[in-house]
Image (cartoon, rainbow, N blue to C red; front, side, top):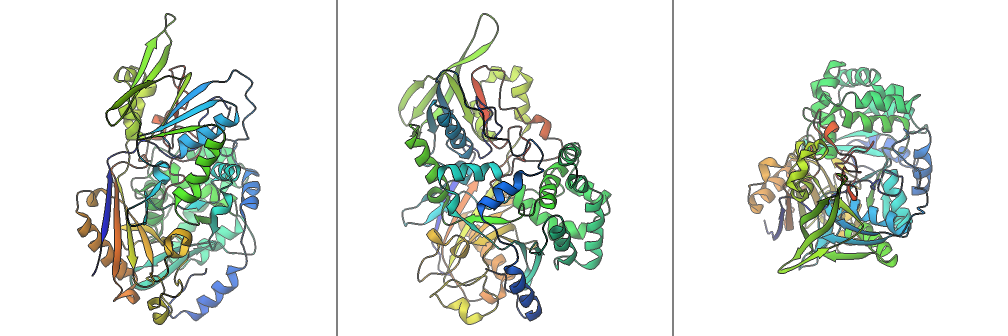
Length: 545
């Protein structure tokens, strides 16, 4: 097997994705192919044309009858003095904060320790011209705040709508579906999807239906805010504990819900909070398009971070790359209040102190722990942050000399004249990567290369067992598991590969951890937080799969 590889390892990143900060603004932040199943294929061809949507219908639809905190209105216009703001971290949280502040007329500088922007949704180009991503990024229809941001900066046209079905690839090329394509919308489209799925056997589907019928999801149909509070109250138990107590089966967890949980939060149902999973279920049940998936046309650096960066710079914002914050400088005033007085920054051998009126730390969990002054742990507010930890994740890219996910036609899978295969996010319960996609098909602008085949991007979760392994061994293991899922790919070769290891990615949304998420406004008068781990109505996993 011919193979070249690239590697990148981050024990912790400097910025994290998340909704916009509450600072100053008043706002919180083609069809599936089945081998030998002509009847199913006919059904899929019928369903494919039933429900499609564009970004505009999604945004307007999602706001109707939604829990109040999920989709806050545009912030009121700021009428105070113009302030100088320093933001630490150029991930999605930092950049979305910058957009809001610049729109309010403030002066904004963004500092990023890496050589590229985007944080967890970042990407960069290696020496051979390959786009290397930090993870696999899929956009559910309930990411309303993100869609609002993308529309503002002109990036909304960079999203490709996928068929409204969640596809499971089982060992041997057996395909299961949770198919939301139905002539009638929520909640009937979801009920139909769960009752007709071929990923579970009849007994497990029946028990699954009982569990969901006894969940707060039903209340969400008539009382979204009340249901959301009921769901918050379940934060202290795991999804498995809740699901099994309501009559669900272990097989349902293993064959359907574990892959979904791994894809969402990088941990399984035994370790993820019931709050996390049920929040998503409530949105899927009440909003027709919440479960509709979109992917970028190409790399995040070009099609997501790029337009946001341009908007920020056009508004007068400034990026300072490779500048890391070494220390937060602060003083206590005579009246007992604490204020940040500056940031000690460094870039290689250079050092300087950055001064501003207001400071925003748009970091991930390991980043904010390194940044906070030790004495600030005397505040329970800051000390609680140390109860949160990130989840390790390994992302592998494999380029092939043919089309791996083409299950229907062996000849098509070997030709390189045009792309062939599954155009969607793919889940699997039968590999160490819970979700994956062929980016050459799903995000073709940067990943389809004439004369080359599939570019599989696989997310290894949990990533712990793979972190110490050499890249060659990781690639060998993943490629063998790909072959087990797609026996028809026997004989195809890996022609290029990359491995990205992130020691702490999303914060671990385990049972009982939500109370430790901090507000975005802190006890330090001019110091604010942003990032997916901060306290928001939405779950912290949004934007990263």
